[in-house]
Length: 282
Image 1: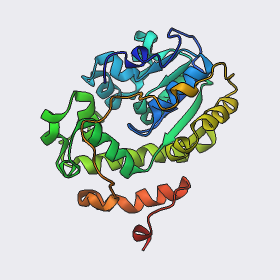
Image 2: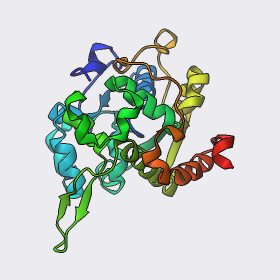
Image 3: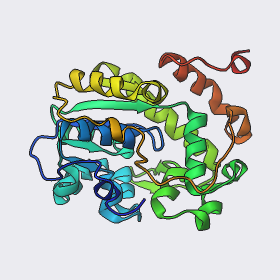
């Protein structure tokens, strides 16, 4: 991700510190959060901050790992980097995993949850990273030299946090495959949404792609915001770097190391209104 890419692309008209953040856009990486949040900011003219955790440490994942092991530090990191964490619209896929801290740091902010089928999320990730699909059958550490930064290592490596006998948290070895970790993260992301669905507005990326303008207009109304600008010329803009490889269509069967997670994936897809593949139901 290029530094301040959302500024270079004019994904928001203004960026600044606001005492009251109005909207938080949540969801797993490569589910469409950047496009939806950026276009929402353009439509409403709101200030916008994209991926504050990444922007704080420029891909080193220091802040992310610190909050993963010590969630109570979320508020302090947000306060120390208010220019990144305080805009009218803030989007960060990693935020979903710290929901209690998020509610405390952003009282009253509306939450938009963006979801996408996991096989398409994974296809987009390997395209972004220039990896073949079968590479994800390896642990993330085996792929480290192919990754652009430590933040992607954290994503492919999963949470990997264990609690020792004295209550302290330590990182465990990255024993699972990257595919297992990605599906596990996706499951946890959706579990949090499903447990808090009455407090969140959900957008399925597939529905958004079918009707971008009407989806954004409906979302703007639901959030109590005003659509100030015509964004028709920006609807198909690329808001994230294009992929370095193009993987073909994937299915959950392409990742045998994550087979044990598939039943849970299918249950969650059904709960969020997706049709599950006939072969997977049988």
